[in-house]
Length: 365
Image (cartoon, rainbow, N blue to C red; front, side):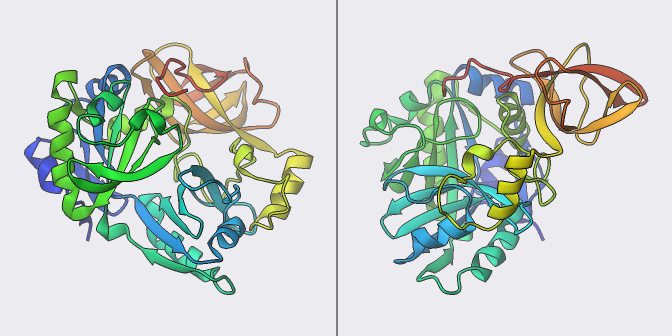
């Protein structure tokens, strides 16, 4: 049985196309993917991301515990956030996630919706021996995101919090429209914006207040369709498409969140250290389509008659007007300027490896 977020009825009233996604009934689009995408690129959009999972980790051993299960460094300043992978002993990725440090002994982990049950079991299975308490707050937490170059102008109408002082990947506790919220300057679009974590009971009031405040800027509700094209344009990977248990952070070019230069004894460290030294046999790359159309997830890539990779994500990039892809390719074919062909319904489409991100003019840099 698919769950509904606290904003389900609001989406239906707005005419959204609702479909199952990651165990929830979610809005895919309200008008068109292109219209919603462009609203975020040019002005501002609002997202319901309440399907994401939230785990609160508290206790004297919280930092040590997170340093064991995450590849990135958990010992950041209070009020900071960090992106990380969480890996299996073989180096494969359990999930990629954002973690917010609330205080010296308290963190909030935000995991992908499709992985909530798996991640909850994984986190708890490794808590033995650490002085931590872990709570799954997913069902009681709503997440409303405001993204786009005008997002700060919209949110400043609804809070007394000094928004300009919140730097990228920082957060504060405050109020939005009179409701308590964790206000984070994070997002998944390549644009400036905020993610607002509130109680599920407050989600509708926050949503309506943001929509009212954003009316003068032409705010648009944005579904998961445009969320996907926005993240793809800036080269952000998606768990289940681009990365999974069969992919390591080194292969995914996420080595910057793997702290091999520290003495952190995180799960999968030995495999990743060896892979970094020996170089992986494949890499995730960005591909620009040369011509019409675009290959989708699963399309095979060829160098002449030889298969050398597979597309993991593909779409038309609305802000660019042509197709783009993320793909896993054999070592040697990851260099910028490499020309390959993607097979789409029996025909070949020329593609070329380019430097990420595809879209370089976002308001968040």
